[in-house]
Length: 206
Image (tube, rainbow, N blue to C red; front, side):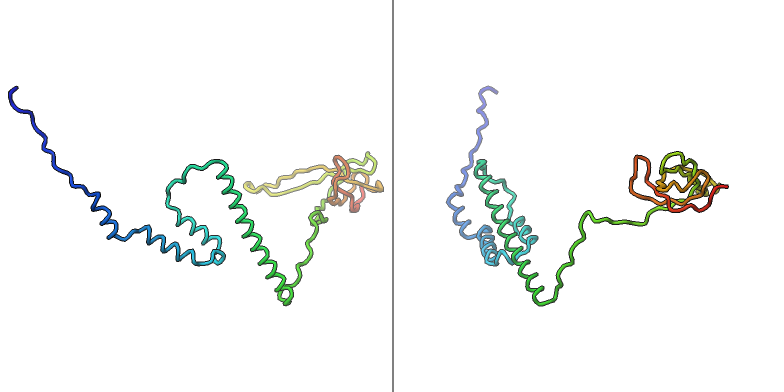
């Protein structure tokens, strides 16, 4: 057993394909050359004729998915500055084009001059609330306390639910007295608690 010769591994000669590879590459069409030709044909089109969406789509399709080479911060900054300048030039050209188009349309009379906009802080008054109630107190000067009684039907139980709330109203001439039925209208804040004004006295207390 010890005298038996060791298993000898038979080495097969490996054919050298380095000389054949250039010939194969020369015979097969290079896909990079084909893509370069298509890129040249697409670059022949004017860049301004493309819409921004088509331009972005074209940029995404040209991306190979490989990582960029490492760049220094100065190179990145220079790229950003160049891209900003390009975008600014496009914006400027677009604005000039739109301005010329508007001027031509206004000169031809197709578009009328825009109406002046209302000021932002213009006074806009909607429908003011009006309430009717009974004067509870008139002790304060030029101020009355009015009780507003409300009655509504309960949504589920169909029972009449009565409730009341009080508010302070401005009475310039001290015309209303306790027990009178009055009508008040919503107004701007007149004091800490007054947001209403007296309109008229509907019924005097007996």
